[in-house]
Structures are given as structure tokens and as C-alpha cells.
Image (cartoon, rainbow, N blue to C red; front, side):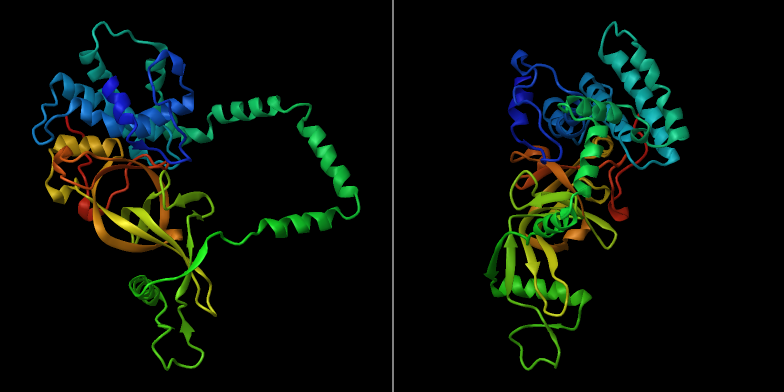
Length: 381
């Protein structure tokens, strides 16, 4: 447990995920909430468990006690992802059933005198529920209970009283003008500083913009055509921004690791700069300069055993290597999610430097992968 706690300090969780106690397992930390248990199993354990139970990823004996424990954890994590998914296909219900049966099978081998509880029996009905109802988050009672609890905590403010107050305010003269003023004041300009960027950054941004807008020209290459669109050399440098109005990203931890999709391919990287680019006559562009992460354990890499790669796939974990100096420009609209991550020690899993483990923060049942780097999708017995 001491090894787990010491490694826990290396795990970076985005603000949208929350956090868990650094002294996990000690009495002073108390009990975990349901949301913290979810974070622990989905985003923390997959980033740490390999340090504890794996010594050689090339030759894994999955029938050994450590191999059974890894198999047990990977199956449980996959079941958790499927249950919390917001988009399901019929195959996911079958995958849940297979993974949970394997979880039960390995549990009996790991733990002596294991007792069967009602929860274990209830979970066996989840595949049927997934087929009938789809994503269970849409029919779960937990969200409604949290809302009821929040309403109960409101001091002398019921929904009816709030409604009456709003009606009285709307009846007052000048209330509509007040609402307009509030809406206008809320539309603040993006924060940041305008900087005259260097030639290297300017040329890289210009090359990116010209891929989709060939009529945009360099500000120094004259003469330009009449009514030409000119990329301005002064750009707004920002510390953070919202992507798709819901994903907060930043140039510093914990929101600096992102999962993005370009031309149908999934990529990962760390944000180095957030730019707002001005082209007079065109809309402003919000761009990210991202330091790319190369997936080192895809099928084509021939690294690690098939068992190890399948465990990574089950736990939606990507092990990659940061490529220093290889920057890619990404529109903020291309960002799919932020990601939890852990910078790996030197030599871990054969990566001498720049190793990083990444778990995208989304509600998908499985890890999104590119076809040319597809990991094994059949269970390894």
C-alpha cells in the first residue's frame, strides 16, 4: 500500500474528474464517496497497478497469481467503463457479460473462501438491462437522488417559492432591461495577452490556416492581392480556454493533456500554447499547439505481449512517448476530451525517456483506436 500511495502522487487528474485522498487507505481519510470509488477504479488504478504486479511485459504468465490479479482488475475496470458509458452497441452487453464472468472466475482463484453477495448476483442481470434499456445512466436513480438532496439543502427555498419570486420580479418594470444588461456583461472577452509571435510560430500557424483557407496570405509578402485576407502577426496568448463550451483545457496541469481527432484519427498530446488568431474579414480561430504523444504499444509497434496489450485496451489506457519538439496545431473544436495521465519513470516498460500513461476522460465503453494501430480485441484466456 505504501508503494501505491507513493505512486499516487505522480497521477494527474483533470479538474473535471475530481481527486481522491493522497493518504488513501488510512483511517484519517475516512470512507470514499461513490464518485471517488469510480475515479479510483477508472483513472487511478490502471495507471499504477502495472508497477505493483508486472515485472516483465514481454513474457507474462497469466496463470500465475500476479497474472490472475491483473486479469481480474482489467475485467472489473472494463465492466465499469461499459456500465458508465453513454453510447452502447449490442456487442458491449456481451463484452460486459464475458468480462464479468471472467472477473468472478479469477476472483475465486485469487481469494480463498470467497463468499457470494447479492450484488454479485445482481450484476449478472446488467447485460440484459443494457440490451433492453441502453446506457444505464439514463435510467439510474442516483442522479435524481443527488438532485433531491441538493434541493432539500436549500434553506427555505422550494421550487414553488423560487417560481413565485421570479414571477414577481418579471412583473416589475425595468426587469427586462436588467436581464439584457446582465447578458451583455457576461459576454466578456477572452483573457490573455497579445504578443507579436516569432517567425517560426507564425509560419507554422500560417501553413495550418492555408490548408483550409488558401486565400490567406503572409503579412510581409507584398504586394498582396486586393481585398486579400492577411494573417496578423500579433496573436492572443491564453492560459486556458473552453473547447466545445464544456471542456476546459490549459497550458499547465492538470488540464494540459488532451485527446483530439484529426481527419478521423485519434491523437494525444500536451498543450504548449493556446492561441487566438486574427484574420481581418474572417472569424477568429482558437488554436492549440500540442506536443504529440506517440502510442508505443499499438499493434504495429510489436512491443509487449499480447496479454499486456489487451489489458491496456480493457482499461482504456494508452502508453506513449512524448516526442520533443514535434508540435501539431489543433483547432479547439477537434478536442474530444482531457485526459488523466502519469509521467513514467525512466526505463519503465522499456521506455528510456518521455514515457507517459494516458486515460481519456470520456464516457465511452471502449478505447478509441485507429484502424492501422488496432490493438487486439479478442479476449485472451
